[in-house]
Image 1 (cartoon, helix red, strand yellow):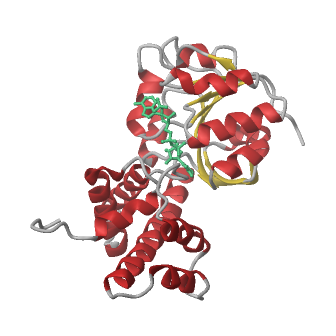
Image 2 (cartoon, rainbow, N blue to C red; image 1 turned 30 degrees about the vertical axis):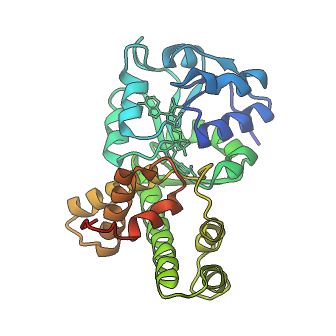
Length: 294
Ligand SMILES: NC(=O)c1ccc[n+]([C@@H]2O[C@H](COP(=O)([O-])OP(=O)(O)OC[C@H]3O[C@@H](n4cnc5c(N)ncnc54)[C@H](OP(=O)(O)O)[C@@H]3O)[C@@H](O)[C@H]2O)c1
């Protein structure tokens, strides 16, 4: 396997960014990290990464920069903020946008960065740490070819889908399925509880049935335990992705009733204050609050 040449910046050290940076360090790659909340760089700095003061500092001298911040607003701040990646002129390396954002946002980047890829990451923090993500990539063929050695360190499957924005489109439709499936599971669990059935028994039965997808089996354990902390995937990020799906559907003239309903439920759960919990906390938005229409 060809090794990536040069050091790599990882911008945004949440669930996924921390996993990706750890993986690169484990593979002997020089890593420069930056995070808005500086304390989060501590463990990676201990493990050998250079902790930069701001994004422009982080990308200095790197051959690639992986952006794993939360959303489009965060991506704009990291790229175009006063000390952002583009503050000192065009970034000469490969910019890998692994944040899930609107496809149009990454397409716009093509005018500002000579080499850019958008990468939809399928997998969780454990997959990120162990290089077992499945990566769906959009961008020009020549940029994909140069970024491939890096991506192959991070993923067990690396698929070039086509033009810039394709990675995000793929990621959004995968998360559309996940959001709908997790909400369906939560709806069944709430109905079971309201009907006086044993919640644990019902969740176990669903998980062992032909109606459950692997993500439902996985999330049924969280629901059964009532465990919403230490999120694998934050509820507010799922709400963001489902809203992006709804926007894509509207722009394409499609009606996607399940996706639109899931987007509304996840937005409501976020507004109710569950955004920082695991996405399975969507279950909290399914019980009506007495005396309100919510
Ligand atoms: N978790 C998953 O399983 C998964 C899988 C595939 C793709 N994704 C996508 O990958 C991206 C990261 O997900 P995650 O789960 O790692 O998220 P996360 O744990 O919530 O971390 C979010 C990161 O974004 C940073 N951030 C948020 N707003 C910012 C802003 N305005 N300016 C600068 N930095 C900002 C946070 O910094 P602070 O530490 O300062 O808050 C943190 O580093 C998201 O787009 C998500 O949809 C996630």
